[in-house]
Image 1 (tube, rainbow, N blue to C red):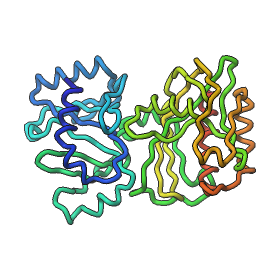
Image 2 (cartoon, helix red, strand yellow):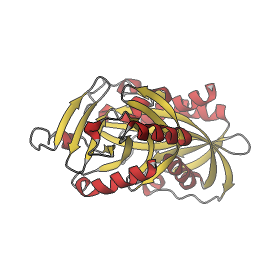
Image 3 (cartoon, helix red, strand yellow):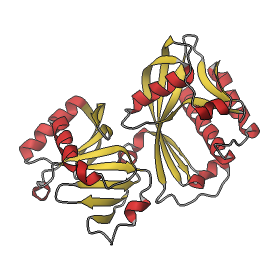
Amino acid sequence: MIKEIIDTNLKRIENDLLEIKDILNIDFIDIFPTSNEHKELLDTEALSIGKIVKETDRGNVYLLDKGISTKYGYVNLIKVRLFDESRLSYEAAADFVVSNREILLSKVGKDSRFKYIKREEWDAVEFKTDNTLVYFLSPLASEVYLKDYVMFSLDDEDINLDVKDMKNCKVRIAARGIVMDDKGRIALQLKSKKNQYKLIGGGIEDNEDFGVAFRREVLEETGCQVEIIKKLGLVIENRGFLDLKQTSHIFVSRVINDTHILDLTEKEANEGAKLVWLSPKEALEKLRGCYDELLPSEYDILFDTQFDVVRDIKILEYYLDK
């Protein structure tokens, strides 16, 4: 029932969404019951495929055990709303992540379909037509409802820069984390031309599930197929110096097969990327020790690389503390 509602709603709105540029992925879905009885059925189904992560005055928010695949990516977070007759025109309302929300904000006041909404925890651009009701939030709904799953947040102060306003920044989603072999060693990528050690991982491609993206990144950067042991949580990276907010989904995994074949990007190859396996203690020492030796590259300014290293140090420290 829930999957059918999501599929039907997204099919209905796809033509209107064609004019929204730079959609990265879907973040969240509000489902509107058609009656109180329907709400009870939806809540029962949601509990069978996920767990409640937030109880709100408008309905329960559920984190699904397995994301629902759509053309806009995987839906991992839904809210079953209280029955409301005023919402009967819409089966659901979707939240999307766009790379530049400023473009949508510029339409508010000029195009009646776009409206700015301010709430205590977030603000949103609403896009509403006869067929479509969608939102573009800052911070993302997933960030608001999954606060307890956030391991930590970083901003410019963590690399000794002044903090910049991040209100209308670009957005990027990534997956990264811990890769262990059968000897208990952790995989790091050494970018020798930058003197940088980093944890394995990178950006999510179109419509990828977070776990799928992590396993793909691991295979490309290490040549290893892995089993995900658990998800550690989320890391929020507020890179004001780039006007970029990145949310990294952090996983712990173990190697189940090593193909010994790496598939590095041109950027990684040009930066001298190599795979190294180190004990957890040695890996943390290498991450900490490389910070003062970092060099910029033709691809990244020094601040960006420093931010990567600080993030990875904190991820590994968090993992070892747990």
